[in-house]
Length: 384
Image (cartoon, rainbow, N blue to C red; front, side, top):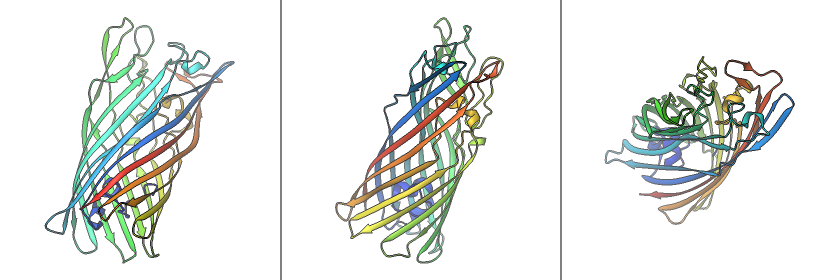
């Protein structure tokens, strides 16, 4: 459904992820377990002076597990939900390449660039049906994450003007909250709204090494952005469901993502300078008989990374704008269904200058991030 789920609770995972109040609109208690496999195609081209080179990343597949459970309590006004969701992450692996200026060995270039980040949220919620039409929900968001970055540009350079690599010393923890509302405007129209707060994370600590190979501790701050979602669903056509969502993701006020992309006197990069963005999601579901459900969706995201920030986001090239999705469910019996889906992030690019500490933009230079990605999704749903 392309993520259009704020007012279209077709399953426990989609309802819990985008609007916990919508679990009051589900007909049954439900357990859903799923996993996505992310495949990315990332390529970097850079030019400095007369030298131009292109290098392909080799990140492989990236598993993204998800779990959701909803349960109608004895008092039918209340529905409890528990979600365990992979809410953010990225991975890339660009080998050192002496023919590609930005990937030339340090300190001339950045050398090998690798990154892997995964953030998981545990989200217990309680939804209450205030009336036959209106439900509200609230609950905490318990977040844990692990990050690895090479070279680690978010702390000072070593004595030989090279950056250390950085691997999280452990999973780091943080918290926030979410609230939601779900309203049955008429038999065919539903409205939904939700707010996820920023995930306030503890300071990340990383293990690194100085120019002599001795250990050093690196630190940086990374928070996840707040998200506002508004949506509507329509069921006025027989066997059809249509849904539309609009979202606001506040990257600009999330530590790490929104901090200015500038170096201090030690060579430390303050942040990635992402912009806050709006996103639009459109989805449709068609039921065929009692067992088969076919779905399709489209998502448009404003790009949080400006052209001028291309160089700073070589390790986090999340530059997609358009995504197409399709898939479906098959009910094995009245209680169990299997899901499968495929999403394609259409290729996009960002091009900007090479920007170095103490120098700024290198005259006549350029660096281009090119990325596309595919998601394969599998899951099983069990109803009570």
